[in-house]
Length: 67
Image (cartoon, rainbow, N blue to C red; front, side, top):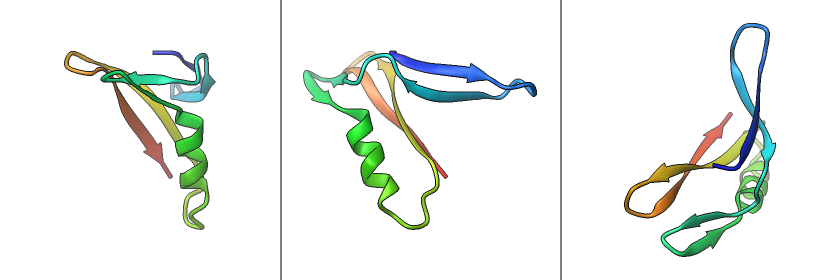
């Protein structure tokens, strides 16, 4: 879906960036880095990653990981 990831020595994957910076959800363009920046403003958030996943109805749907 346009995200770049890596696997570590234990086999865990991490999203490290975006190949494309726009997720198109139902014809609406959404910029994941802008949403990630919003999450980073909260003092209890140390990591945030937004990414697109395939969706039959909308084409793409947003998902997120927040630590």
